[in-house]
Length: 454
Image (cartoon, rainbow, N blue to C red; front, top):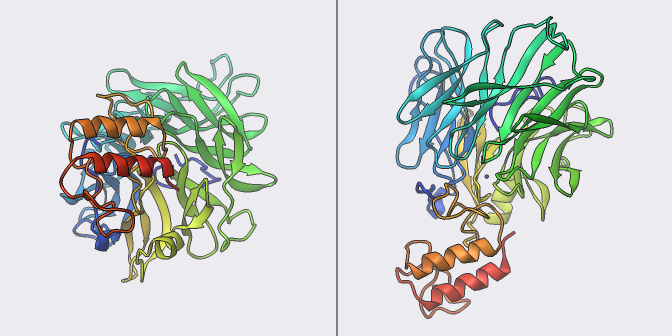
């Protein structure tokens, strides 16, 4: 999930290789600060699946600027595209933090960008002939596929004449450039072209967003590389994000006459509900902004009068206030903060980022860390050499056990060191690494794996 356009007006909002953020007990929740200069404000929009990198935007000396935050470097500005006013916003980051996408003001206008450590901020461009405007909202696991929207020209000579252009979803690669994904075809296609791509799966071959159904209006949809467009219903609706394997989709749609956050799986669709603090009106719905790799943990923003509220949804507990979960379930102190939006969650579902009002009354990005489930060690079906091999995915299955055994046989630290030798359940050292790898570690892990995670 990326920066938040108005959910039903744009309804177009758009889970290790690097070391993950490893907080001490005193650092389970903290603000990320802001860039030097300008007003004090920062907002996080996404976190890498491996938990190493948070991205967003802040007010710098020259204007609004995209940032990249890591534990070792803190918040670092990414600059902006040449020309135009100084403005850039980072919307998404790949699995290990080596590719970041978003938009910036260039000499052409608002323009999508792709940032890598080697290239810096690279302009993606637009389709020639129309009004110039493009933005990137998500990126594949390897950082090679980018999705968002562009602005093609009006085409009255097309088989289905296009007489009004709002935007068109795109899929971009460095070698192939912009691939137009189109909109709903005939008979529901027609004179209005309005589609946006908000999310892409890890492989880069399934894209979600919305298109414009000429008979019914804005409809959430997915494109499968080809591209083949599939409507998801709930009009008006918008698909906002997708799980790593493409099997789970979240968004906002009109179900039962009111807007509701939805989650679609191979077994059907359901509402995520609303926080108890919200009413039942059309302006007080939950907006999903990120989900972990398996799609079993969803985070976002509960809209309501006054200040919005960050939420977390899990299969076991449903939708809950993120502040309540941190303070009451885990004893993580957020005193003085008002958490307004949770915009990203790591692949393992335990590292959460977003923004809120800090104790000084300023808008600031934050990072929160739920207690780790050490039985979740890798992404399902990720083989050695894959970018997600060794990256948790908030699912406990045979892949996690196999990965741990592989690391244990290699005596690989720190993952295979999980308990103190000779410590029994209830002992202070039980579950506390001691710098050695032996049979006690495999026994402890198998017990944790059998218990699973919340």
